[in-house]
Image 1 (cartoon, rainbow, N blue to C red):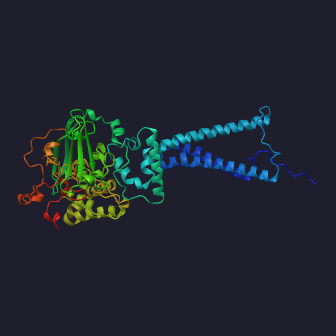
Image 2 (image 1 turned 90 degrees about the vertical axis):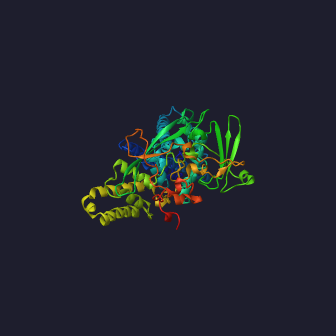
Image 3 (image 1 turned 45 degrees about the horizontal axis):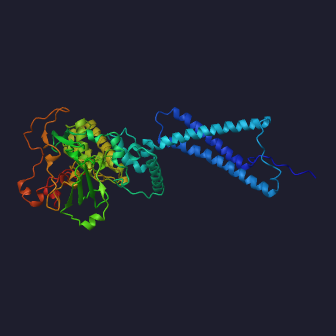
Length: 516
């Protein structure tokens, strides 16, 4: 009877480890193929990077893990079969030619794997820090990414504001990313995405790396093209000087609110920080403080003490610095000014704003609805124009579709007025959250809401060249005059701008617009 076959002395000689090795080799080949393919791509998508630097290297790691598992099972099998003592793992003897060859092969394979994992790890890190990864790999981020790509900060990477420098916030962001990944996977995320981000890094640690508040201190010329809602789309321009001011030792103007020489604390009764019933101003120079409480929605001291105090910084006014959504009337004004919608199409402004302001169930319905509204408007009221200016009408439709797609996202429940902007007070409360004439100190001093405190009186007149000073206007700056009999009503005396210019609709001009 012949002796039983002696098993090979190396533990990797088993079918499980062989299978793991094959998987690892396949993963390695996929990485090499993807890297070579990436060199030939002008702009690889973030999904391509996920496969190249995350998924395929994970296949290699998974294959190597299976090799180790196979070796573990093989060792146990040998112990049970009683051959383990007869098969000690050989020592490395570099005088043995076979051992030198095996050692060299192992060293080369190890070096290749080290290079591959280092390369993949580094590029995987860069991928997770990229704008494409933050904004394009997840459909939930479509509204924010679209707004970001149309913002003045479109060349500032997401992580520079949302993460910043330092290991602490990097770890914080990655842990938050895991939570967000789980929310997307199991569809437990909120729609729309709630704002503001309450655990956002303070502005002084991010914004101030580029912006230098101590060096602010001047007024800015503001010129906005405006078109009337009449048949001729009468072109006008609203011009004013914005008293931006600075936040240094002699802080004045709007940036008086900066946290350098003055500290403002406030409480809010809503998650969007739009309702502010109490705030306190502390002057660092002498330590004096003044508290203001809303007379409309007053809070007692016990209630205020029990509420979360927010310290005002850049983001309380500049709350949409890279993710702004334009109201339809302003977006149409810009399109008319740029020539994307012909100003010679009758009632183009009125027709466009009304069409954009309608509610649509999804993007497809919106595109069809906008096309129908524009074509039917001119077909019914101006059949000659509908027949002779087909190209201008098609261009107007395409422009309205583009405006809609930049600002409204039905699948995420994002409409024109979902995300308020706190800069100014035209379309949302903004400044009037505090400067509404209804906040006062315990001794009865009311916080001013005088317009000229922050900007000169607007002037309305013909459009002028960029930066050209406009002559003193001969007409009132507001295109529509509130009748005297309406102003005689007490509640009408101080109607804030946003009440009539609410985002998502044409401005209110009739009694029925407010009183049903």
